[in-house]
Image (cartoon, rainbow, N blue to C red):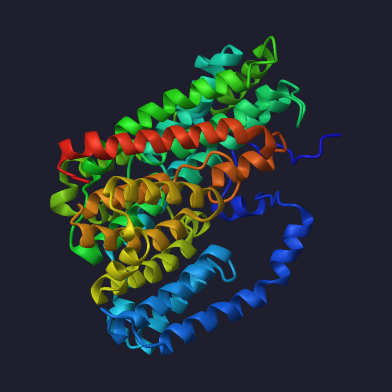
Length: 493
């Protein structure tokens, strides 16, 4: 009897709160027990570090406000990285500590919850709720797989490229929720054995890798991109438009989509002769969905109009304003209800953003970010090496941590480097936010990876070499763009 959970009905979408239920902790039991036993020690250690930095004499070049900002930042990074407290709870603690430590007035700290990026993410989650709840995404996936995935190789390509393209306009967690039950049902219909079939590994990796790579293409793929822009804007009063973000990431996305498919084809060859039975079942599911309903067409129209508005007018109107107008249109057309919003929206992300933006702004305004950057990577003579190390750190940390936490921890340091060495802050923002979202090995950090592991068909040891190749490909491709392509867009490194 199979040990993994039964495939969900395609008519019942997986909700964000249900994604958390299928996350599997793949660490050894000894590591899990150790992490839980040391949690109180981490909480105490963070408090001690905070108190020590707060009371210590500021080093040369820093005043007491900058020292206090560093103390709050150190506490936040310790708790964010270790997970001693939930991300959003740590961020709320940051909002309280900044005024108490004298870094900024309470009114200023709490006002950062009104940042444009927070409302953009909230509206993007609502748009994804409409796409997911009305069944538009599932219909697209079913029809693409049954029409273009008629052979073992073409099915892998269909899963990989479809999830990549869908993540251009729908948040990663929503794409994963729509496609995962279909891929899981395909694997079972073909009768692939967990832990033995390399073709099954390729199927779930195609879903996870495609989602993660496509998620860096626009501001919609993951929450880390709007967070990075918010920290950039609060710290430097600069920004990157929706169109320019996509222009800056497109070559890397194209390169990784090609490289990923080649890696999947080489390391995970098809060990099945035919998938006709599975394609037949997909056709039956598609037929049962019936004709495209008015609600699906209307949601598609609103989404297309919204993306076009972002591409054309985000700089003048603001990407958050466009997103909120799109949500109003969904409610006006009765395509979305507040009950559905409550089911799909991850409210914790909204809370996490306020604290991350506030501490980033505090570090920049007090000069603590420049000091921190100078004391770490600033000792190097080459800005090329500094940016390369920063990007690699973001990519490697993204394998083990929440991507938003990686951005919150590394971007203030990067912006300090930008100010100290006269580097374009927009380039640094992209160099941190993009690699932080590229996860190819571990299940932590992204819903797509967590779902893929929860299927029972993936083993970490099988992913080490191919995943490392993808990490290396992403890092090399990113550095090539930073120094040869982004200057053409006006973003000098």
